[in-house]
Length: 132
Image (tube, rainbow, N blue to C red; front, side):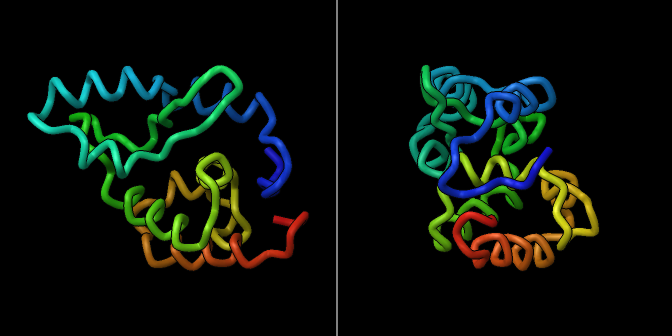
């Protein structure tokens, strides 16, 4: 998969890959599931990575632990991505794309190495427009 390029449309095959490997439930499906798990899902809803695809809003499954809670490393990275002004769709694409800063590993497969991931995310955000 080519590296994400902020400002260019994310190819449909990226969303297909996310859906196939991690699931890509709708925002409403996630809201219903969280309401089953907790009394007030709104604080969690505000932390969700959301992707905006032509026909709706979806939540990449890589951000959820098996029990339905949010993965703390993904929450931390996503918060940092928002500080760096990286849009949701490009953050998601970055998460599943092999990164040179991670010796060819995908960020999603490197979650135990959070400091290295934050550094790689900063490198992604710092690339000149059209090359990131």
